[in-house]
Length: 69
Image (cartoon, rainbow, N blue to C red; front, side, top):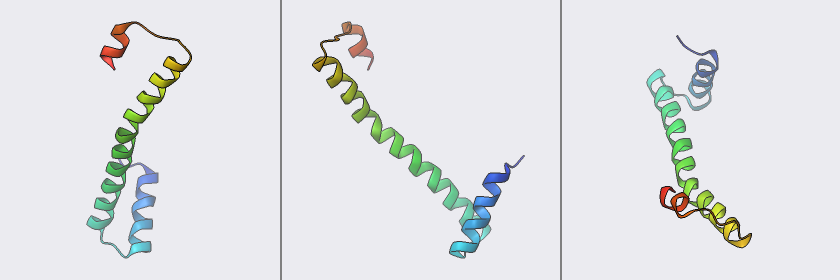
């Protein structure tokens, strides 16, 4: 079962960048993979900001919280 939005995006890629069906499919996969890599790379920065906020506001949690994260 195909979602209509995914089909439209592949058609856009095919027309805009003159790609084949396989090229449009691979570009969609690469776009999704790049998004997940971006999210994974942001995780340490987010955790560091949470830690810094807790330290600055003296909202220290138990040691178990810091061991898990």
